[in-house]
Image (tube, rainbow over all chains, first blue to last red; front, side, top):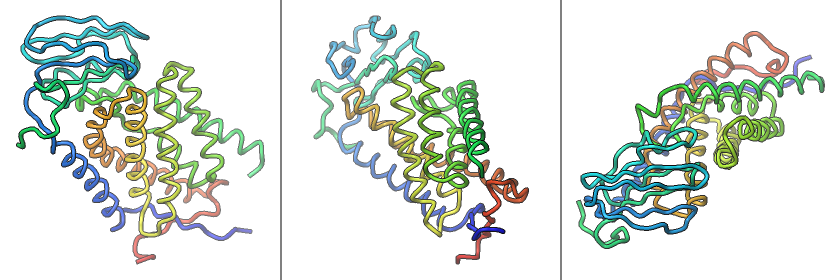
Length: 132
Length: 182
């Protein structure tokens, strides 16, 4: 004997379009909220690990910084940009994310709980900065 | 479905989900979109299947065991936190959106993918104690529309075949065609 049939929708319908719009709107709202602050080039990079301040480095001084922890990361600063150029973490997302130079951007290595926060001249990302 | 049969099916689904997420690592998606946390989310097909055919309880069991085993097989503790928060949030969202009569499996899958990304970013914010990491969320949400659609399409094809074949777990299901509810 068959139980009561449960209908399953397997073809695209109008409601799905609504779901897509909802996600798009959420993304747009977040982008709008985020860019209300400042953009522009970063002046320095702050290194945070496990939520703890590890130091701040000038992006105008080319250098390499070694970071230890659960894994080893090599941070390189060159021509006003920063990147994690080497890491022994699984995944290697941090290395693949490449070079960054804009304020309010972050380069992260989640396995090592590391965040490189690119900041403007104020030290902290400016909330009342120049609008683009 | 008997107890033994249901246990065997759950075990196979866990293995399948683990295999899919392992396989995903070899897809060079990161080269295309260099953001942390970008992946297809093929294991979500298993979650969708469990939710639709086996019910919430089995789905949660499969999810938790899959995340725990995934962590043991190489992800580590950090990876566990990420996959479990993403996974639980995605499952809760899909369990809810599934009940909406105007959404098909595509919509449910997209909502699940978006919730997964949100969960992972939330975890990153907590773990790194930095809200700046949330700057990645908009891009990840946009990507989740595409990945959610793709996993939805794969699931739809699988489900259609399983329902048509009248497999034991699919015997009380039937495919609803668009228009029926409109």
